[in-house]
Image 1 (cartoon, rainbow, N blue to C red):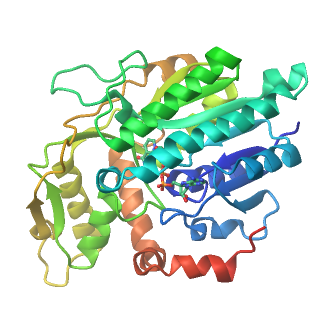
Image 2 (cartoon, rainbow, N blue to C red; image 1 turned 90 degrees about the vertical axis):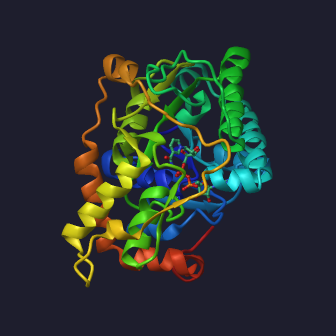
Length: 356
Ligand code: NAD
């Protein structure tokens, strides 16, 4: 075993940020296993081209032969599992892929990791970690005055997405209790930042605003989400890998509860300042209210006390600083946005990246 890690789903939004962050901060190779679904974009990792610390492998976490081969070949000291279908709206219209990847895929991955771990010597077995990246949505929805989710909250998932993530969290937990696999689970609030696929609220609003399109707000816009800058999430995962207690779960959040409508208004105000409309009017004029999503959870809020107190992690960004950085990033990377929205990023993979 050596210092290498395997990251799954490392071409997606958080996974790509994590791979970049890991290679910046740790002197260790990342093997990045990603199926490149519509959400996977190797252009996110363009800055690593030719860097021997990043080995990309195109494949499915449910492909047991491939996973086994990677484990045997690279002998990683950790596997960090980001791979998932992640969009709630898509899970409502077509839940099957969510069950296949998030539940069945995680199961296959766990089985292969368990076999690999069983074959290690005692020291290697105790050093190894399987870190499963999950969401606060597994806890269900909070009322206005309920305390924020703690690690001890009951799981009450409400969408096919959150139910599939909850199922995978339970499998991970069971592999520790049943087989002793050294697992860690993180449940994080909504992320935002660079490389976010423009189907999610923040990048969608920035993209639509600049394109002169409507800014859709579900229902009354009063659904509350807790926002965390993606680089803070990456730092939290690094910290949990380093010092988390095996078998435990850690909530990750930025103490930034905001109603969706306020997020959209804030984005409009920053864009008014950084990239004003030609007609001098505010981007707020483009806001429209649309029919709410079925079963839309009203409020999520994460209590990250445990991670802060036990592992000393704290977010570096407030919502105000992180959201400004994010808007600036999208303004500076309009070519990336254009490649994603036009679908061009798919051919970018074929022409720019040598897959193994
Ligand atoms: P994403 O949809 O942007 O990326 C998912 C990545 O996984 C893509 O690159 C995709 O190609 C890959 N993938 C999908 N199915 C695969 C499979 N079967 N095998 C290998 N790769 C596969 O998602 P994200 O927003 O980056 O989220 C990453 C993880 O973090 C997910 O597990 C998600 O549940 C969790 N999470 C996300 C948020 C958030 O706000 N985005 C918050 C908390 C937790």
